[in-house]
Length: 115
Length: 508
Image 1 (tube, each protein chain N blue to C red):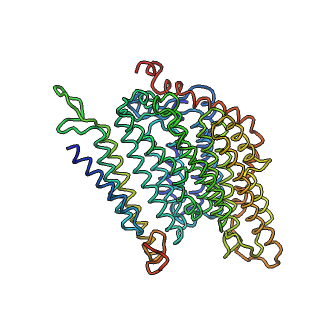
Image 2: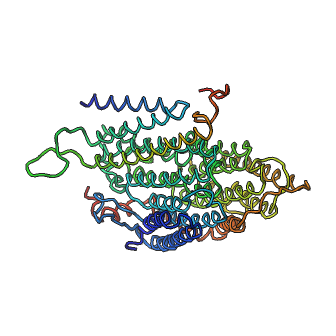
Image 3: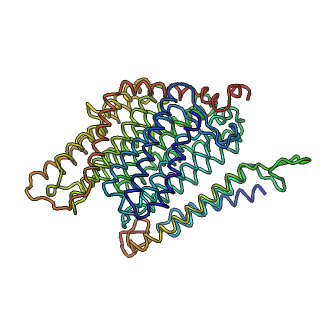
């Protein structure tokens, strides 16, 4: 399970970084979303990977999972969800106002813009 | 101080929704509420400062759970200093914004209060994850403030600003996760106890976490190579917003000072003084890049933004020496560069408003209204920023140069600080002579509309310039407080004992 979780975090983060380095706003937004997924799973695994164990003290139970990373992930999800919503709106507004979705605001037809 | 510690966070958090709900169409009432709230925060901050100056760090347990199980706020000399600086700057920025800037978009005052809440929270918290949350609070508010007024240029810079900071937040979470995985705690004082006990096998993970955390704070502090977001953002933001943002880079500097003296400081075993080898070269390059930017910028807004980058370089050079003497000099420079940077942004806004179509471009153009007063203000603020005598910039740089005397990198530090001061002087002198002297020779005047309450804005800029004079005049008294602050930072046992209780520091 460790290999599976670790490689999926790595895959998400790599795809996120790749998309983040694109020159248009939509891939950048997707890249940020993928990176935030990667970090959420990463935070979970930082409390060690334990299956089928309760996070709250109970009688007759020896193995517990760490509840703190779960609380951290919950906060992180809420924040990254809000932020993603904001940046989507911002990308749309700047596309409508500038007439281009290039991150430097240069027109797509402009030969100097590159991509 | 009891419950007073939480007032700088809770009061803006309560006033901001009130402003949204009840002052939708009444700008004067919004201004009044915002102003009263900021004034109360300033009074409380000063009271907190007096309390912090009289003894050990004070702890406030949120939710009444003892540390390290609950989140705590910690008031020591450094956090009190930062809260006072924030509150004072906020009040002056509000005065400036009341001259009409705050009416150019919606919800300026509500966002402003949320920004204050985030800033004060970041300075007061004693928990790394809570620091992340307050970073997000201040960033969300800053996105709104930065976009205030709208326009294509602002939206473009705004997208880049938000994207860079979202990446920064993600890295912050990775760093927090790594540090939690090896230490099992996120309370700063508890981390200071646990970090030296990390097993050798885990130290690579811990170092990776510490390096990522340093990168995050470097993004906030606009350190090379992650400084590029600052100039576009600050130059595109409205003048009062840019002036308030002068404190935002200092949040990064504050976090570096806090974490890398307390958690990764002298007692951290293998990770002792973790930041030093990374921070010093980066800070020196930042200073050089910033001041070269000053001389190459073609608008006043960009020039001032580059001078802010350069000043962060100077500040972090002093921080990265990690001696008590240099830290005291760094804190004095922090006060000075916040005031001088904010004053320059305000003056830039005043000039651009009066020059009509030329805006803040550094070109010779027609004469404009109030150019005599503005040239005087610009002259004084520029002198302070580049560090010429007699104003506070000179004193601060002198203190930093003096405190670097025993460092290994002293030839580099002295050479770069002195050369860049000359370069910055040339840059500001060139801009000033083009804007004021050469322009004054022409007879025709710009007939830009008279700003309605221009006197408020002018007064605010004047107050800040007077502030640098006051920093110079009271340098002795401020220096005594800062020396004690630096000493407190390098003696982390008192901080740990206050947060975890007297015994826990030794038992664990």
